[in-house]
Image 1 (cartoon, one colour):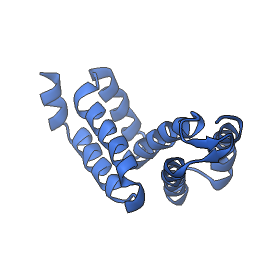
Image 2 (image 1 turned 45 degrees about the horizontal axis):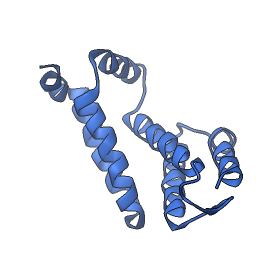
Image 3 (image 1 turned 90 degrees about the vertical axis):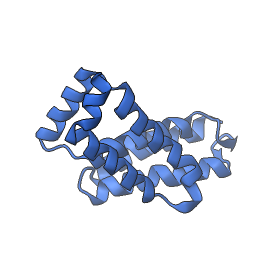
Image 4 (image 1 turned 90 degrees about the horizontal axis):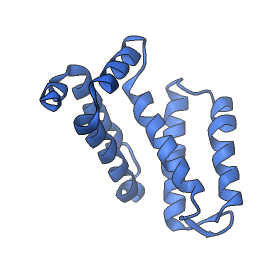
Length: 140
């Protein structure tokens, strides 16, 4: 019952529409990796969010949060974890082809957030890039 109500919620529908728009903005070369990430986020929002998730998200939006910030923060975190996992390395510190595509997705998300003013370049370099790239060098 809640799922039907949630799908009709204009904020959720707007978020789902924005996820679909962000999905189309990814480079064609990495779509086979990025599309499932966006699909997972959309599925989670549409079928797994509980009332408290929806309430928290609505509060975030009412305080000026943007859908794109939510979407790209998700992408940065998930892809950053994958890059640091060692599963996409040829050997320590060197990404394989798929890893380089994930890196492309990671950079696109950070650059989008920086261009929109959600991140500063300095903050993104220090708080996102530096730890992930350090992890890539140490794992593999």
